[in-house]
Length: 172
Image (cartoon, rainbow, N blue to C red; front, side, top):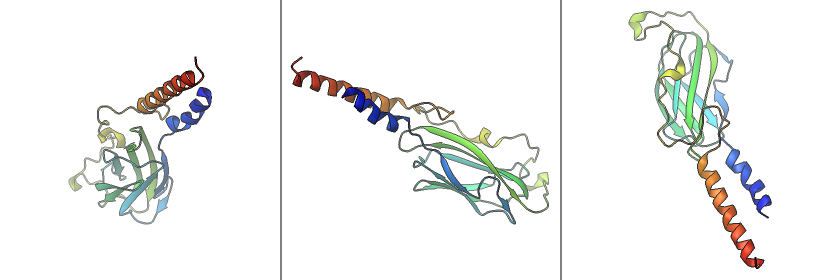
């Protein structure tokens, strides 16, 4: 019985949220700059989640973000044409696991990386560099392969309780 319960508990302890879809999608080619980027995740993102979108001049163009259901939505300001890179650091509201990643898309047009337009345009800032570290107490890892401690502890306590009940019922 204990073995059966451990099999039942294992999938929920190992499941983690991940990016399921984005608009624009990875590798998309757009005629003009998008007004927003939407990222849909398999678990609801917490409000501590971060999105960064940099235009072809390496300027962050996210004006504001919000979580709606399982989506992280970034409203964008104007950006320069070329290759854009979107990055995210999402903390699951369900299990506290951290997921991060990047994708890119292309905006058609002629780029003008004039340094007087607000960014330095030097291209040395990576999208995830400005994303803050998750709050203290996060139990997930950055590689997507770690398992949160809380669900495992709850599962182990449940298994011990079931074992004690079975032992008492069987008279041992």
